[in-house]
Each structure stands twice: as C-alpha cells, then as structure tokens.
Amino acid sequence: MSRYASRVIVSSGDEKYFPGLVVGLASVLERLPPNFEVDIVIYDDGLSARSRAELERLVACSRTKSTLHLETGFSHLGRLPVARHVNQATYSRLLIPDLSIELERAIYFDADMLATDDVSDLLVMELDGATFGACVDRDTPTVETGVPYSYAALELPPDRHYFNAGLLVIDVRAWRDAGVREGTMEYVRRWKDQLRCPDQEGINAIGGDRALALDGRYNFQVSGEGLAAGAIGDCTHALAELRRAAIVHFTGPKPWLNVWFGSPIWRVPAARWWRVALGSSLISLRTRIRLASIGAAMLVRETMRLISRTWSSA
Image (cartoon, rainbow, N blue to C red; front, side, top):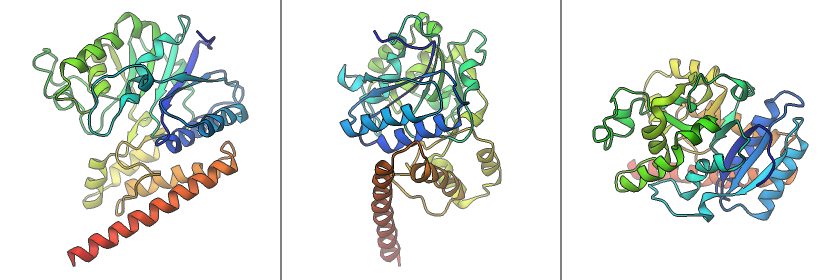
C-alpha cells in the first residue's frame, strides 16, 4: 500500500477520456494555492504509456506539493453491471477507501469536469458528520426522478435529494464505516436491468441519507437536457449560474468529442475547456498539439454532420 497524504484528489480514465482527464487535472492544479499539499490519484482504466507519462509530468510541473499515484482501475479488477454510456471505469471511485487506512479526505472528480476556480476549500471544509458532500443533480434532483425504479421498493423518501456523483467530497472513514462500496455493489447487482447511472444510483440509494448538499457552483452540469432547453428558451438564469461556477461538468457532449451548435450554455464552458487544453503551461506542447488535432478532426466531423442534416431536411 502506497504512502499518501491525509487528503487526495482522485480521478479515473481510459485513453478515450484522456483529453478530459489531462485538461481537468491541469485546471485544478493551476488554481490551487502555491505549495498546497495534496496527493493526486489517477485510477488507470486503460491509459497508454504516453498518457501516463504526460500526467506524471503535469503533476511534477505544478506549483503545488503534489505526488502522482497511478493506481489500477476497476476495469482491471472486476465486472459489475453497466449501462449505456458508462463502463467499468465508473466503479473506480469505490476503491478510494483501499488507498490508505490513514486517509481522511478525498475529492473525486470525473474526467469530464473543468475547474474554473480554486477548489482547495473542498479539502478542508466541515462535512458535519456526512459520509460525503455532493451537488444535487440538475436533471434528476430527487430520488423519485433519479432512481424511479427502486425508491419505492427500498422505501426511500421520493423527495430526498438525488446527488450527481461526478464531484464527491468524501469523508473516507465515514464512507468506509457506512459500507457505501459494498452496498453500492449489492445495489447494482440487484437492479442490473434498470440501471442508468450505475454506481451513482447505488451511492445515492445507500449513502444519500447521510450526504451533505453542496453549493451547486461545485458541479454545474452542461447536460444534453440543459443544452436542448437553452437552445429554444431563455438561458439568462443558467448563464448566471455558469458565471459563478467553480467546476463545470460536461455530463452531455464532451468538448473533445462533440460540438453542440446553437446554445450559449455550450459555447461558454466549451471555450473555457479549449483555452486550458491549448494554453495551459502545465500541459506539454506535444500534448497540446495532440489535443488540437483531436479538436480539429472533431470540428470537421460535426460540421459535416450538421451540413448533411441541413441538406436532408431542405
């Protein structure tokens, strides 16, 4: 077992999500205070040697007192039910309590998130006895909407908060003592045919009653539903929320994989993502060129798709 600091920032990813992972990590490290002491843990769920080396270089170049730990992700360890857009990598966050018995606090962030402000306060904030802190999900804010297939059978209050698990502030000992991992694994096996966001749903069902609702600025979701609504309606409120966001979460289209035409709720955060991707001094020039190439190919592909749809509907 590796030696860790008492607090860690954790993420996971494979090669497909490497662009999101390296840009997200750079955005977090750029905004932490100088000499801030925190270890970085990345669960490797299929990263190439080149990508692992870039992450090591990035952490070493940051102004924080950080050590990178590359750990084996869940994809290499077991098989649990998945659904639609997610794979086994989603379960890697359940491994956090195994890192160290002395570990006290962990921030987990998905590889499709971007920090737009300093998030160091999350590592020192009081959780007031909660197992974890998270933001209420933008599109499914209650248990009734988040786990509609199971809440009645489990006798969960339908109006209880349903949390998005892309950003978790974890009291590691409390999480371990509450059996969140074991309970989540049991949950996804029981409801394997109805799952939409597997471990997120299990974490909510098992630990949501002991969770602390965080300010929504720590997980502003750029979701497909929100983009569609913004494209045809008034975006004023959503844009005001976006301006105060500390973390943007691309729960819908990913900036390195998709373009969403027609919505300012997409253009603003996507432009921020690309400014980090192409301009961060923490990311090597070689990787920035690699990201630019991915972006150019994506833009051409999506533009041709839009033109094709326009012609076919004319």
